[in-house]
Length: 218
Ligand code: DX5
Ligand code: ZN
Image (cartoon, rainbow, N blue to C red; front, side, top):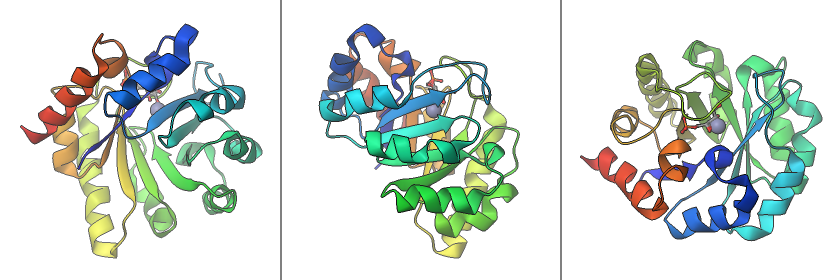
């Protein structure tokens, strides 16, 4: 079954705890936390203090997407703050294996992320070591951008390698996921869909989540 990971980037930060409870009640599977440093991406968002603050609010796994330079410096802090899954960009890691092992040594699930323009081949060597592959379908930095269709063959490629290599990592898609773009992701092999604006910009979050899942089954 497809999992939905609402991105709190599009939530109302003045009532973040309530917003997270609302999507948990609405059927979300993970809470997606977008961490941006103003260097790797042109925006600054959430740090470990917020992760620590929201940890007691939900039983759902916190899926922490690090869009930061030098992620090794902060992995331990985010793990201690309560992250369950930590994903790092291939483009931000000079020694990717080391970073993935570091995340695991902190007791978290480890994932690797690719920007839309980065070829799938660049993560093939790391696939046996990861719990998740996150494929960006927008250039990271902001919520509410348009889905980049040309990433879909990359989803298929990673799903094919997963099968050929007998691996079981999850494939997560992030950016512009909504009714109308969700189905092609799942058909291509995605297991987890991040949805920010498509969930939080709707008054009824349960309905919004249901609509995305229904789209994938249409
Ligand atoms: C983009 C973030 C996404 C973003 C998705 O840099 O990584 O998680 O919040 O937002 P939507 O679903 O609105 O494209
Ligand atoms: Zn994200």
